[in-house]
Length: 376
Image 1 (cartoon, rainbow, N blue to C red):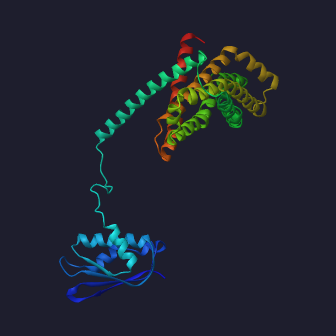
Image 2: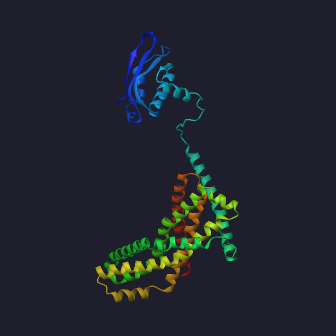
Image 3: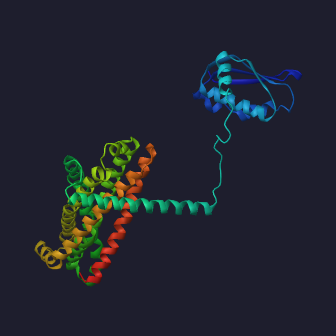
């Protein structure tokens, strides 16, 4: 039964507001406090509004919220409410709700933040991130020195598990993306080379592009979205559950126990994924060259072998190993920075991906400039 209400004048003694029907959450759209207050139209200082719930059916917390809003509206108009005719349960809950006065400032109010304050807050967060990054890099360096000295404490099984997660488990997505990138490079290059009748050099373009740049870069971006976010979520969840604090209490350094296995796993796995990505990209370019531009297989292989040297492979492998270190550092750093709430874990994972990609692009630019200056 839908909720209904009616207002009956009581002379100078006020108004009689009666409720009937079911006032439950499913009928929340019909509980319009503003309509009732407008219908009352009670001038200040007149008699009270008598609430009558004799015809009231089922009711729940939605009805209580409605009555509290109604009482607040009447109080703003200096009109008193008489709830003596309401059911005992309603009266007791209303008394309980008003037993403790509302704390000042408890309600959320819309406040406009000055643009200068937003700039200052952003600068403060940037400064704190910089300090945390500096401290994190120092601790990571000490953990690496402890590993070289044979004093780093972490479980070897954790290292093998991370290698499994970062390596073989990532092969399908690396296969798909690398093959498609090789296809795209071949098509884009063919459009320009066809203007000069030089489709034969598609092999040079794809092979050099994949080995020196795109193979390492695409593999790193894939791993940033896959492993970097996973590292941040795993360590962030441990931070929420106070597991990292427990490790410190037991004498285990989180940098050695958690960060070092993940960093080593990516350093060991990324070069192999890079070489695999290079191979798949070249195969993708070969498929386009052979199927759409009638380039013989032997000629494509010959041009690829002539254009690519070991130096090109080493540059790509070095870049990918460096990107692996940056992805592990970004993911683990954001995980350790994570707050103590469930939403903070998601924010940490998102921030880890963004930070990893920024690190990757900056490092790639620096390495490319250095190689250009060295003539390699």
